[in-house]
Length: 290
Figure (cartoon, rainbow, N blue to C red):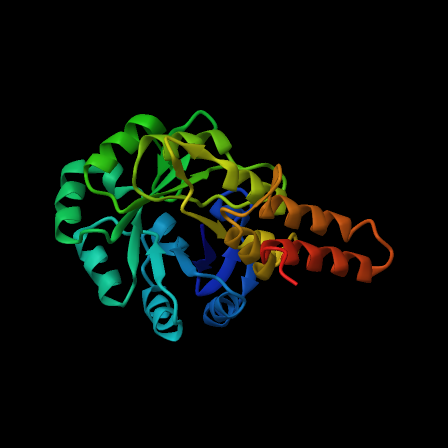
């Protein structure tokens, strides 16, 4: 699994939306470029930028800033928010974006989406924002589409989508678990990469995401942001957990053990005990070599 660091941009600032509602915005950083560089320096594999002004207001004033962010980073950057036409796809890819992320466009014009995938193969990822009942919402979470996750995945996979990002609208990622059922459904239906885009609460949630498997497929990536800002875990800890895919320690995965160590730190009085435990887990990961 790859780690995507998320940067939401509103009015030129990096922000957080606790429940996906633009009216509840929390400002995080006046310098999104510096924030993005910090994510990468700590180990993020990819950057996921969302232009909230473009998504919710149709205002593209952040595009120049996003172009500067792409040039300032040495990892692939995907950009979403207000990309609802071929002109915007060409514009954002022309800025140097690795991929564009669309949500509304394929829901309202699937014929155009087919054509765009032929013109820009493997460069258009679909972001599906779902309600608790799996209905898809569009236009920056402001409208219900009347379409549901299962049939949407089937249709858009056939159209040539490069991958899918799944998140649940209205969920507070710091208090509520990811929608595991929606993610498992997606992994089971499509062969394209599926990315958990709704955030996680802690390392236990990461371990649970890593256990999702259907039809021999697993999640391809995870997007984080607010969890790290809130101190639930560090980028470095998330990277270590995701790098442990395939490692087995009896009935536990590496992510399970890392999560247990993180909990252990909260109950021991001597920090060296937790450090020793973490070192032991790393020793296991290295094959128990002397």
